[in-house]
Amino acid sequence: MKTLQLEFYKIKRRKVWLTMFALLSVQLLWGLWAFRNPKDWELESGWLSLLHLLSLLDGIMVPTMMSVLASRLADIEHKGNTYKQLETLRSAGSLYHAKAVCGSMIIMLMFAAQFAFFILLGYHLGYEGNPDVKYYLLSYGLKVASNISLFLLQLALSMVFANQMIPLVAGLGGSMAALLLMFVSTYSFLPWGGNLSASLVRSEWDEVSRISTYCYRTFSPLETAAVVCIFVWIAVFYAAGRILFTRREV
Amino acid sequence: MAAQNLIETNNLTKQYGKVRCVNALNMKVPQGAVYGFLGPNGAGKSTTLKMILGLAKPTDGSITLFNTPVNDKNRIKLLADTGSLIESPSYYGHLTGEENLYILQTLKGCPKADIDEVLKIVRLNEARKKKVGHYSLGMKQRLGLAAALLGFPKLLILDEPTNGLDPAGIQEMRELICTLPSDYGITVVVSSHLLSEIDQMADHVGIIRKGELVYQDTLKSLHTHAKQQIALRTDQPASVISLLHQDGIEVGKEDDYLLLPMMEDAYVAHLCRKMIEQNIALYRVEKREKSLEDIFLSLTGKESSL
Image (cartoon, rainbow over all chains, first blue to last red; front, top):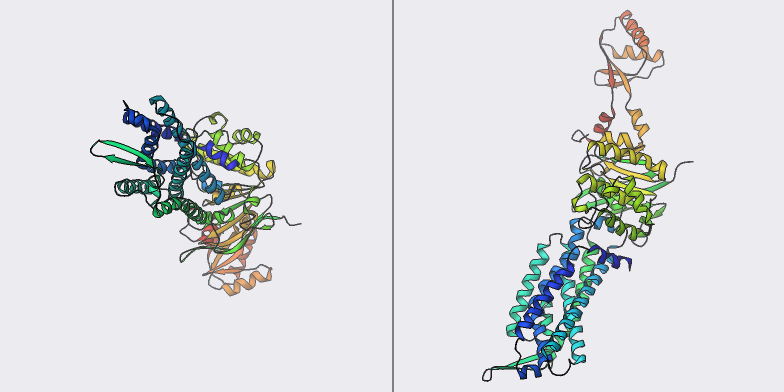
């Protein structure tokens, strides 16, 4: 517990929160622009379209953010050569665990803030009714899980490699792959495609009326497997990262 | 009664690929000592200290700390009474000196008041609120020492602690290290590639060369090796040896020279007179002095730095 508390203490002045806030601000501005002057039919399906928009925005922006977050948490240790001191006071495994939990908590808080912002936006725009609590909670949970899996992958790379260009390049490459996948598929087994797989809302574009309609998605077996895969990735990346980190010598 | 050893290694070995960095090392650090771990660059000092601290896994051999064999399960518990500064200091550049120490104090579970005390000891009190990223190398080194001193552990392991310090800082560091056993009851292991440094700080010394411990004893004992001798060259060494044996003097040999223990000028004059009386030609009489440096070089090889 002390080790975890200290993880938050260590990121003082590292502007980790500012990075997250910047992401949310961009997404909020995007939302404001996308939903400017909403029509009646847009207000009717507003809460659904909001979930759909969030999936899209997160699919595009968040994978890179996860690599930045992991890198910000890990490079303070590399820069100051701190592992050789910390590992005489705590086991490498517990240090790794504290970083993983700290990052996961930041992710949970970040998406809680994101949902709060966008729900307020929905009310501000005058969407009809209220958000469907069950779907919004499920969506939040899946979003957190898919981004934690991605964060754990990035954390493993950032903790093992002192040169942070390696995990950052991996993060950018993965983000590009996930972005391309969004044009051709509704799911992905890649860790970077978690935001796509976990989207609960599907949109249909009518070329004649030029109107998008939204509905909750029905998951095919493969799509369900892609969602389950998110949780498998969490276990795999955590275990692999921890093993790699504890086996290396300082 | 012999002092208890705080560190004992038994055939400690570390191999990277085909290179054996540390080879069957048997190190013994007595309680209350300042143990100078001396050796040229690349001799295996840091690797040995890292293995003792559990930062590198030994290929073979074992380590005993505070009379308890170290394993993965008890390592952290045993190291709780140890402070260390390995190679360069560890720090968070975006945090102040005080905040850096707070992190380690929390992890060590020692009193918060220790932060003030160690900052005072290393004279960083005035810079405590300054970000460590803005510290000079010497200040970072002193912060590293302060971090190692937190909780005033029983054992302090310092790897080249004077690196980056100016001459005044080096002197200060030496004085501080020398006082740690008497003032705080701390046993210190300090590594260096400089003989003069160890000579001024340590009371016990271990000399490592190419991963092997080539000497280990008190510094006093090392000094006794640095003795003076009289070297003598003559055409009839056997006759001179018998003359000396009559007086009960043991004689050594080196190349064409006879090596005699240091003796009074009067006896040297008496010996020379006797040799002349017996028609023994005396070519040279020299005073030979084997310095600590000579001993160090003979133990570690001529390429070593001093």
